[in-house]
View: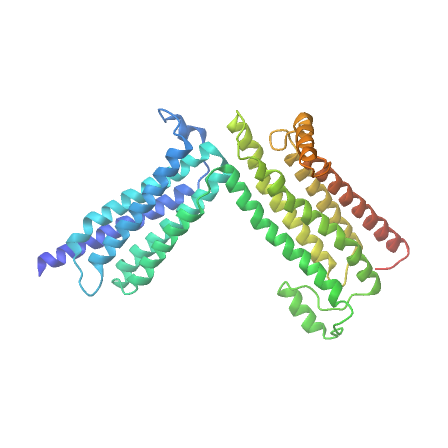
Length: 377
């Protein structure tokens, strides 16, 4: 009996150590990478090697977690048999965190995505270890399943490279932009349908919950909203086209991969800035509107989309149109009897869309100024 108790104590100590290892790994993953971290490397590992190592470590964590659960399940505990897989699990956790930091060599966006995936896996393992220590494994099936789910998610969502990581972020932001545009569309559609709620207390409660005012728009406010609607639509369309026209055409990396990654890593924060700017416009459109706040939000949105345009049209991401290639494509189209079609030039499209955004923003600005001068609000 005493030997069994000793084995039990050792298993608990190993689980506590595993919990500490997980905590240290998560803390390390939250720290920014520095040049000194990679200066000790004898050679720079290829991205393919880092990918393979990361996937292998995920497999080891999956397997070790299963082993730990089998030997510590409450119905038939075997504490002594748990020591080795717990130790292996701790080693794999530390290695996974280290491997995740190496992705920084191939882009900060890729590294950020990988760190998040690794942290989710490690947090699930930490929860499993804590459960065995504090609850004697009472919820072991659920916690083990959570680890397995996080491992499978990491396998599935690990970006192939920095381009894929940036593309993933951009697409996620696109969904939020489309939601904001739908909010504006709903404002226009519902402007004449709902009743004006006179209860000030209810209005305040909606404001506190972040749903905007319940007051009905005035004619001037509806006019502003309709004027701003196409502006936000153009911004959303501009943002949407970045994936197929810029990020989708980067399958063949240029000679300087580091330079490409630097250009790519600027984009996620710019994309998020567009989302925030559009959300500010939507917030300013809720009645009662304040023309000054609305004008400020429009100005910020236009400045932000101009910054995006500047960054996505650099030669590294969007090379100038190749005239010879375009003429060759035109010749091939003509020879096939398809008619003469001009080759698409993404740069011209972005410039045209930006011009429409500027035109719409100017029209909104003139309207707001006229309404202020006329004393309307």
